[in-house]
Length: 375
Image (cartoon, rainbow, N blue to C red; front, side):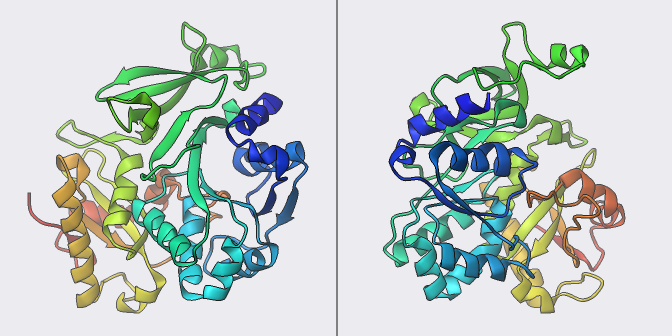
């Protein structure tokens, strides 16, 4: 499975055969991204892996920036939270950014959706330094070794996952207006050891692995334009109106609408009449927030403007966030709120901060709550 997957990647990134990759990577080898994907890519192609002692955390990202300037990787892998934390340093320090981009061929993200606003800022940074790095992504799961698709062509949207890798079959099964993606190929697990029940449930009648991820087409008239990630069906919830909320797509839309103000978000509102959210804001605006989470007047105005911009692009109640509250402490790894891959666990945050969830859901007039435009 692992060898087949590396060969599939080499066929869409043929430069790997002639240019052994140079990576700087903090991602843990116990997970598919850092181990099955990145470490195996270095081993397969005779490359070099520098282990980064930084992390996508305000106290550690400075180490990552310094390490990038020293190593000057040819491919850079990170999760969206990592890019969001690193980007302000690169935008403010031309020397570090220039060194980082000097021989960088590909910037790659996975593990979660990258907000379009972050994508656009990265491309502006590349253009400013006259560099040649291309941003891209792919999609897959632990059970698929991991990569199933690749955007190995120029794309304009951060949510485009590309097309199937060589030897990968994707079956698209209709789910409301989207499709559940199911996978078959030499890189897919044959099942779960000692758990025939789980194995039977994991595959459909044609032998395709059920991923639970929803997809749509970037262009309904041209399948070659690639697939769009349309949410994780298990993360979705219904409003009291019966309308489904697609957390995986709404979260990056909210972040993008904030124009850099919101750094991450947790979508709430299960069985209520409206979507709400808990958000983390850019640290440079933290002084405008009281200890108990009440935003100052200017910060409140900017958050209200964010909700208004999002509402103007929404096609219904499930595509807008009607109220939010700002989190005053970062996501806690020890509490399971953030994974060791660096992205937020939506369910865990809602559980550990249930009091704030209840506040934003049931007390819209509380001073901590920011409200969007009325429907």
